[in-house]
Image 1: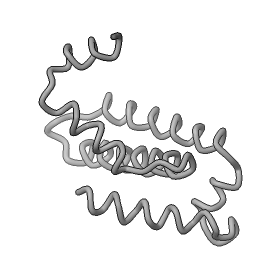
Image 2 (image 1 turned 180 degrees about the horizontal axis):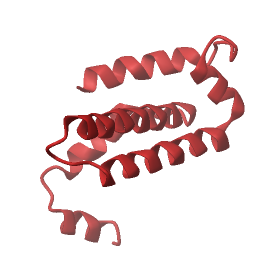
Image 3 (image 1 turned 180 degrees about the vertical axis):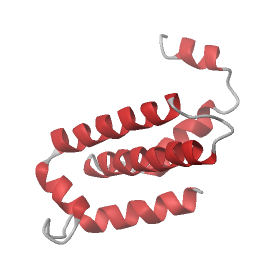
Image 4 (image 1 turned 60 degrees about the vertical axis):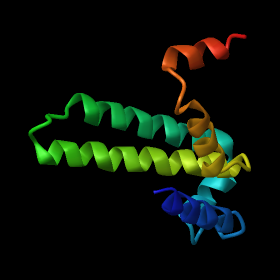
Length: 111
């Protein structure tokens, strides 16, 4: 999985120098962080709505959650790239948290 994220991150970096007329991602970069954050927010809301409507026995509703989550992840990766960050940094953070209980991790942020 992380290999796909790395490959996508590489493509997103390449789009920084592309024309906004030729690339959706380049057009987002040119519109700036505010526009990118609007897209992340929009995709997050669509993911929430799809999940709220999901029926675990209905394959179509599960597919909608997957589709919207992919859109959310994609736009989040665009945001990270715009900020000169990448998926590896997020994966490293998740790895740090892997063997820590959620309550311990949360408490450690307040110290």
